[in-house]
Length: 288
Image (cartoon, rainbow, N blue to C red; front, side):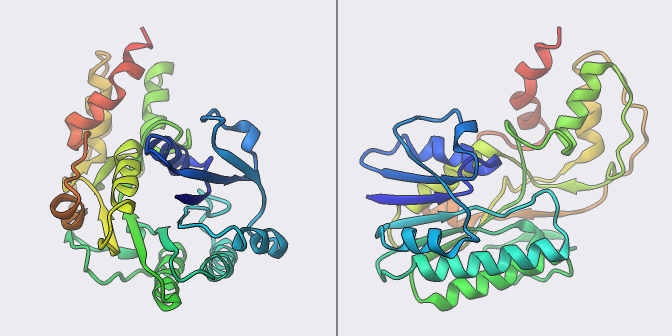
C-alpha cells in the first residue's frame, strides 16, 4: 500500500511516521522541506519539496497513492491571517490534485481550535465555530475536503504536548524554568485544556487510517480537563520547588472521542495530570 505524508518532519508528523513505519507492507513517501534534519528510518522515501510549487504537486499526483496524510501547515506557531490564507490555498490545491484517483483516502489534520471558545464535552459531530483566523481556515479546509468526493478522515487533535514540541510552548517552558531554577510567569495559568501526548495522537491517526468504513470528523483527546496552573505546580513539586503564581482554574472543552474509543478500541496512554507527570518524569529526573 502506497502512502504519502506531508509535514512529515514536523511535531506530529515525526511521531506519525514512526507509527506508520511499524505497519507491515506500507510503502511510505514522506515530504519535508529539510529531510536531512530527520532522524527517522532511512527505509522511508523522503522527498524534499514545497507544496506551493505546482510542478512538485503535479509530480506527486502521478504517483497513485492509496492513502494521503496531510499534516503540512507552514509557519507554525505563527497563526496570522496572511499565513492562514496561504496555507488554506496551498492545501486546497494539493488535496484536489492528489485526489485524481477516486480510490485514494485523505487523512487531514484539523485542530481543536476550530471550536473557538466552546465549553464542556465536544462530540465528533459537534459543529465547529471559531472567530480565530487559524480555526476558520481549518473549518473552510474541512468543508473543501468534504466536497472533493473521496473517503476522508478529518482528525482534530486537542492540546498536544510531547517530544519535539516547540520549546516556547507551555510545558517545555515550565520544564526549562525548573532546569534553570528560575520562576516562570504564565499568562494562561487559569486555563484548563484537554492535553494529549503526541504519541497518543499519532497512534490514533495510524490505527484509524487502516480501518475501512471509519471516516469523517474524528476528535483526538483524553476526555479530561487539566488546569495549566496545576500542571506547573505539580511539575515544580517533583523537584521540591514551589510554584508561587496564584491561579483559579476555569472551565474549558474536552473531547468525547467516541469514534476512537468505540470503533477503533483506542485509548490514550497519558491522561490528566498523572499522565503528564508520567510522560515527563524521566526528563525531569535527568535534571539531577
